[in-house]
Amino acid sequence: MKTKITIAITGLNNTDNPGPGVPVIRGIRESEAFDARIIGLAYENLEPGIYIPGIIDKTYQIPYPSAGSDELMQRIFQIHELEHIDVLIPNFDAELFTFIIGKERLAEKGIRTFLPTLQQFEEREKTNLPEYGEKYKIKVPNSKAITSYHDINNLRQEFDYPLLVKGKFYDAYLAYNPEQVINHFNKISAKWGLPVIIQEFVKGTEVNVIALGDGNGNTIGAVPMRKQYITDKGKAWGGITVSDQKMLDITTKLISETKWRGGMELEMIKTSQGDYYLIEINPRIPAWVYLAIGAGQNMPEALVQMALGKEVKPFTKYDIGKMFIRYSWDMIGDISQFEQLSINGELEL
Picture 1 (cartoon, one colour):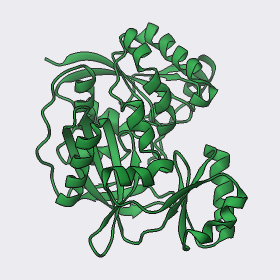
Picture 2 (spheres, rainbow, N blue to C red):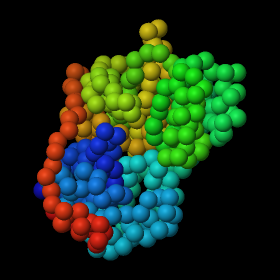
Picture 3 (spheres, helix red, strand yellow):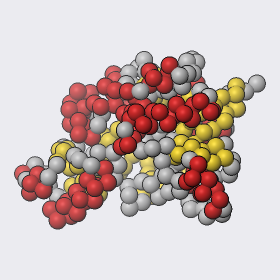
Picture 4 (cartoon, rainbow, N blue to C red):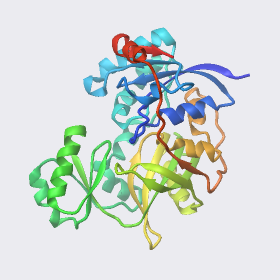
């Protein structure tokens, strides 16, 4: 018999820069263990996941983390009074800090999470990647955080063009000259703030690993993927699971040494010489998680189990050659749905 449970989930922006919320929900919906009531937590009232039939039972609007951690937490507690949330799964980098430092407050209310520690979260930030690579003996591209135009003028002393210009949370653009760096710097800093990260461009094939750590150094699941189609935002619009033991070894070693807790994504470049460069660690489940589910590792289900304190056996295999392709789909709704969420801050489909 399935356990009845209420799970609150963010990351419902299923657009050309998709959040992980919808595929995480799909994995939970397919669970053999849970009969879940899904509460959607939306920052914007046009996030597509809100309106997809069969995905969310009820949606509540929440304030952006930039409005203040306390304001966001108070809104979560208001929703909890109405819905009695058992597990909360945040899916955005920008909100994780609030929920990590607030996990004890959440636990006191009976809301369980399964998140990295603050140290794990901070040491893998893009600004700290060179030190991270040195500490854990992983190759990483040369990186530097910049905060002004003056820094851009000095880049030629340390970097060759082209180079990557990255936001501290999201977005990455390739620049071939200082003028393009300035354009990308302006765009990224206006959206995500400072610093902006400059990273050496490493030529090769982009490969990713989704993984789940239990917080004790054990890898519960890991599935490597090669991107088949990439959007102009650098997001995978198609990918295929691959057999790559070296990538898995890098992942399990990192989880063992850091005792990583929760979901993660390693973004790597594999060169023609067979070297692997770690270019980014996303400290949560990535948006392509449904490929891992389709390949035999339902990591959202496992994460919920661990959040509830249950023992979870590690996945031992995955299907190689499983492929995912994203597509656009026009949904027809009613303005009354939009009005309910905009005016009342909640919507039940």
